[in-house]
Image 1: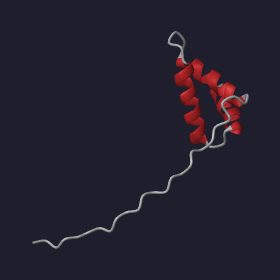
Image 2: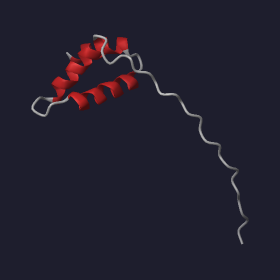
Image 3: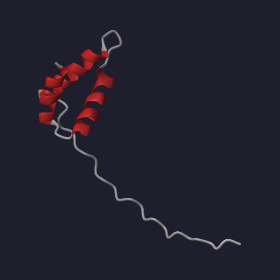
Length: 76
């Protein structure tokens, strides 16, 4: 069952958004057109659960650029 694969993969990558990103990127790279996409996704999830594709890190958060003071001109 895919829910069991997702549960076991989420033990390796706890952030669910990062897990979804890693899995979908791997599916896009590993998918062969003659196979079903579901099978490729299941294979990737089992590989993530097995410890492959786990060396991912969250990107560094860049500070937001400073907002310039709003200049309000009086209506003519």
